[in-house]
Image (tube, rainbow, N blue to C red; front, side, top):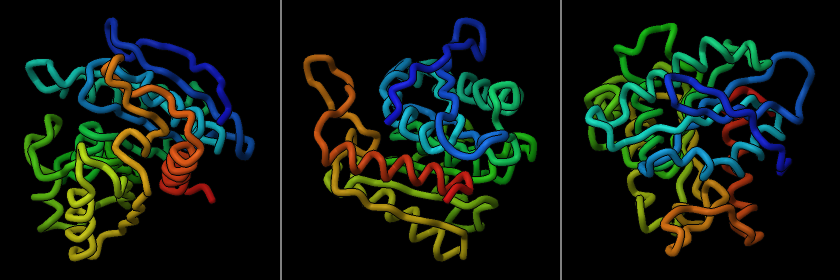
Length: 240
């Protein structure tokens, strides 16, 4: 974990995004990961530890705030952050030809939905998608339908990588296994990683009831599990 602090930019009027520049990897433009947080409003900080770890592997990681409690479920903000990332990644040293859309919890459903939906414009579609500890059977705000529904009938247009925690009691791992099975049935490129941790641990955090949010983890086993999630982001981007 690098611990480097991100640059904070606006991706839309008053809406903030952390830019974690790569601190490791080869010279030249870096693969890009746009990483969406979960249901809690404006919680880009929750994913900071994971983003720092991924940046240390050579990725440019962009983490926007967004709010699922908007009337549109956060659709406009998520899509605005996607457009901003595609447009501005080269200016931060990123390679737009290696663009991963990823998300944790509710953000994972939205990421998989946008990446795999047949109506997503070519200029918006990533080169791979990563869903982390999410459920996929409910409609996504971004597309209006459930990723599981369209992926049960059509192959994914991009590789999909899935991560879940075997001790997750918030979003049980069965949700991830269900999507993995549907992708496999459709002969889609899919990778599944099951980690021995919980909903917070897959992103290198621990839930603090007093703070009512996830905070950076210190437990070695949790950090070890979360580093494997960062490695999945790197593999999705084509890094060894």
